[in-house]
Length: 132
Ligand SMILES: [Zn+2]
Image 1 (cartoon, helix red, strand yellow):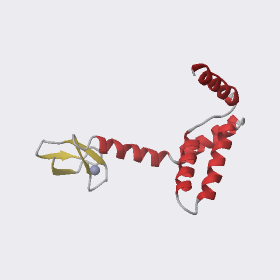
Image 2: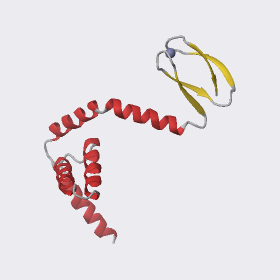
Image 3: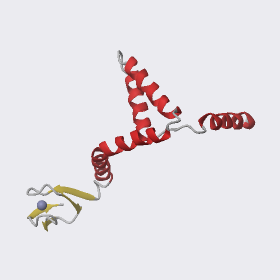
Image 4: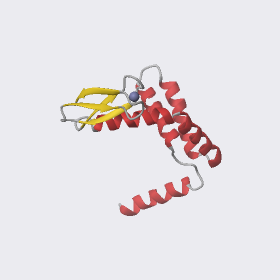
């Protein structure tokens, strides 16, 4: 059993030697293709995207694949940052209250359970009273 798994692992290693493998763009393409494969009438774009993801993983042109991935990461940086901030807010929502400044829209984090307190926006200096 173990030798069979080791042989399979070695065969996969030999097959992937010099190939690009997976990256963030490849994982996103694969996820979108799997979702499209589950939706009726969208199986063809799903298959095409899956083929593209497989092509990228098996490609030997590593420099070009890295450039594609870098471009993807640059173009989605703001979306990924906002998603990360949202996830952090959701994770900490029981401990902190998040408040947007009415003047400059800065996001301010306040510890919960302090009652009604007066605060000053660190960006614009606007004073406000908030219940935490
Ligand atoms: Zn402000």
